[in-house]
Image 1 (cartoon, helix red, strand yellow):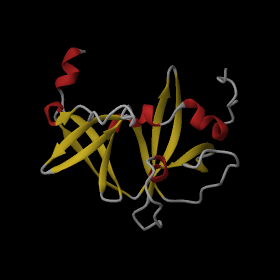
Image 2 (cartoon, rainbow, N blue to C red):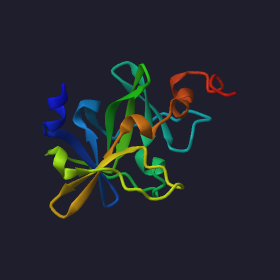
Image 3 (cartoon, rainbow, N blue to C red):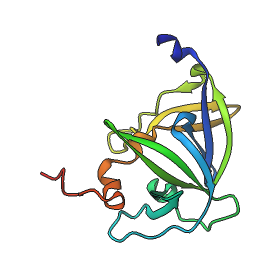
Image 4 (cartoon, rainbow, N blue to C red):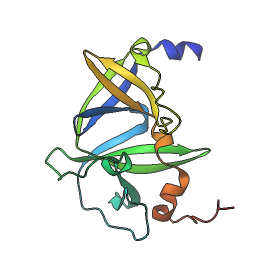
Length: 165
């Protein structure tokens, strides 16, 4: 198992504004064209709603809103990346709206730096690392840490007050 860290890792890259983000390819199920999203009342502002994916209800998140970026009009390149997110022992399927999917790329572990330390005020726990490709940085996301279980509960039918103390 220890040798797995030495292998090249594959990532799906996508853009939001002029920034490039990456997800581990093992977390990505598929990429869909942007489709109609049904709004769900009383969900957080970055929760766009749900889609029907082959008979399954899948919550859809606007990645721009999740990262406090300005909203943008959908384009022909806008898409929904279907990902698998882990919450402890549970997994959930989630759609993430991106401006565009770029490519699948391989990054050697040596080309990935740890997340930047930006002070106590900013939470960088959702950043797995910073990949370097040519002169650009690619923000490698830890998709499991971007959304807390409570963020998704209203859209997935759970009880949001369950963990309140």
